Length: 83
Image 1 (cartoon, one colour):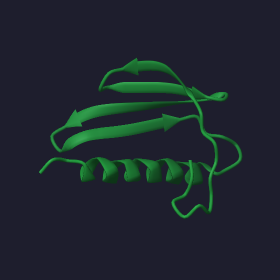
Image 2: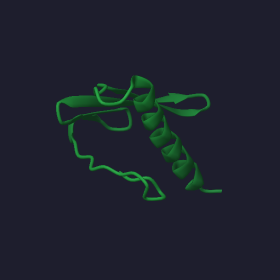
Image 3: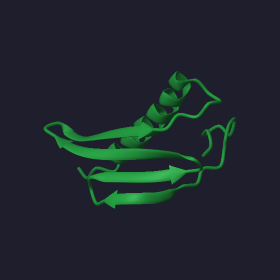
Image 4: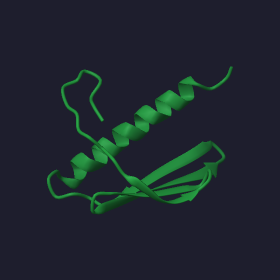
């Protein structure tokens, strides 16, 4: 993963450990794991990520990073909607 301006980047690899099509993903990366749930709401799809925090960065920094990823994903998906 890398910032668009190239100022920061890191390798990211994981293994999916559970998949429920259109509903749920679980994966492990190193000694940590994360889950992603997709829930249909009257306003669209709600995406929630839960993750095991690491010890190098504060929880707030990690939450901000995950939120930035989700926000970028939302922007990408919405740009692909058919008119």
